[in-house]
Image (cartoon, rainbow, N blue to C red):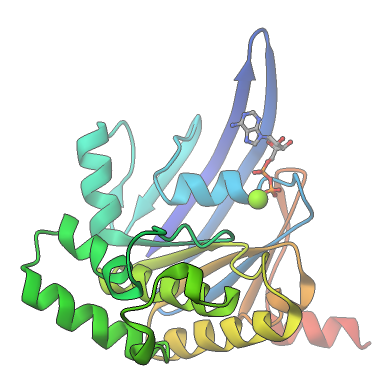
Amino acid sequence: MIKIENLHKSYKMGSNSLHVLKGINFSVEEGELVAIMGSSGSGKSTLLNILGMLDELDEGSYTLDGVPIKNLNETKAANYRNKFLGFIFQSFNLINYKSAMENVALPLYYQRVNRKERQEKALKYLEQVGLKQWATHLPSELSGGQKQRVAIARAMAAEPKVLLADEPTGALDSTTSYEVMDLIQKINDAGNTILVVTHEEDIAHMCKRIVHLKDGVIVEDKKVEQVRASQYV
Ligand code: ADP
Ligand code: MG
């Protein structure tokens, strides 16, 4: 589903340049649930933004569902983004003056789905995240965990190939974090490919595979059982 080879990324600031990703190689198969774990500043969001076509790579190659992602103009990138990818953010990024249902329906509007079908699908995905009865409520009437579940329903509504979540539990208390991760596991069990960026080890352990990023390189890439086994020897 995802294949990146020898990926490099630097940020240029005036005459200075910060080399953030220093030759990343990894692939993700369909149906995987992968954590990209690392401390703050290790380059996780930079990597996820490139995978999400929100930013461009400097060197290396990126193939998404067989499509080489390179030198796309903004229209084409936006089309691929809508077709392939769903995003979940730490700060939920819901639209405050729209109801839960309208928020979930929004990506379908951009896909030119008609109004009736938008409503039906939005309700279906709200039901999947356990929030059907909150459909007409505004984000301000929802708890943090509920807001993130609306955001997850919104990411799923367009039926993307891959869900990309950047610190999805970063703004939540630990109980709510586990509930959100339970939901992410359930969505993955249904066959969805999901990447979760996190700096928290216990959140990473709720994924099936952990890719450990440190100073812009992958220092470990293991199935979670292997990580656990190596911690108890
Ligand atoms: P993480 O998500 O792991 O905390 P980031 O990918 O956000 O790490 O950042 C990696 C490094 O790149 C940090 O040193 C950060 O300050 C820097 N950085 C991130 N975004 C930008 C940007 N747009 N311009 C310049 N530097 C950036
Ligand atoms: Mg980050």
